[in-house]
Image (cartoon, rainbow, N blue to C red):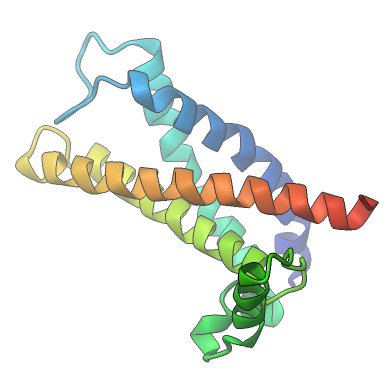
Length: 171
C-alpha cells in the first residue's frame, strides 16, 4: 500500500461505520422522491449530506483495499479464484464456522459490502445531481434496491466480525 492510502485506511473505516449506520437507520424516515424539498427535515438533509460524503470516502477506502494486490483478498473471484470461498461454503453446509483468512467467505462479504456501498453512494449522488427529473425517480428506485442489498451485506459483515472475534479471543 502507498503510505498515504495505508494511513487513511483505518480512519476511513472508522468514518464510514457511523456514517453508514446513520444512513441505514435514518432511511425509514426519509421523505425524498424526485428532489430535496424546501421544507426537508433535518433527517432528510442529514441523510443527503452524509450520503454525499460517503462516495469519496468509499472510493478512497476501495483504493486502500486494492493496493499492492490486496484486492485479491476481497475480490478473489475477479482473478478466477474460488477455492477459499468454496471451502468456506462447503464448511457451512457441514456446520463449520468459516475462518477469517483472506479470499474466503468473510473477506468476500467485505468486498461485496464495499461495492454495495459504492453502488448506494453512486446512485444517491446521481439522484442528487439529477433531482427534479424523471431520471431522479428511476435512480431513487435503484438506490433503494442497492441500499437494501447494502443493509443485508452489512448484517452479514457484522456476523462475520463477531465470529472473527470468537476466533480471535476463543470460545
